Length: 245
Image 1 (tube, helix red, strand yellow):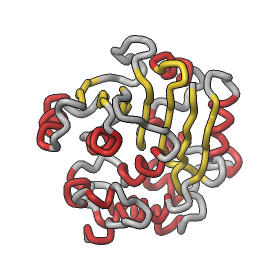
Image 2 (cartoon, one colour):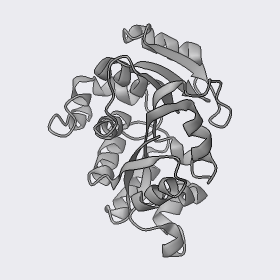
Image 3 (tube, helix red, strand yellow):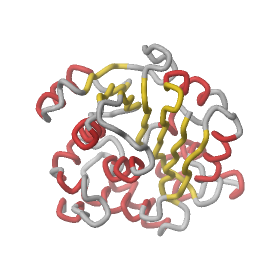
């Protein structure tokens, strides 16, 4: 099953990583595919200090350190920093990645501490509030980059008038936080706090999500597959959004 996760044409950097290793760290769909695509708009340079917000079990932090030569702070509420640090040591990036337990609304960092902040399949849990962008950007240096990859809809739930049944059956009310790429563009741009450099729906998002889930072994695997197969890509994808402070 893991052979289907090898996609060097679309994701040459991720294809260097062992698919079984990535699946063992699964806390959300295809995080390195999402990050590799998102990073094309982030202009990451060696030596930058990057916050990986909602870093999960650490695959994205390893990827950032290895592929871009950046210094990473891996912040997550649910993963033990000691466990994450063991992974980073095994991956050979212990000196470049620091694991921190942190809640997204109470981050233990100084203002302007980071050159970039990325969040892969996590920002939807805490970042949709009107006030959150003002909070998170205080930790960026002037000119710093913000980038997120988040589950997305091709139409707003508000416009549909309901959460479609096949989506509600899998994720319930949480799909109310899944928005279109244009919703995210407006949500950020209207503040004047950042300049949005890209807000796009990932055209491969639905297919990648289904491919990843079919190969995996998470407890909700069958429910997610049922949702995606029922959707057929009509509504579901991922939004990739980048901005400069």
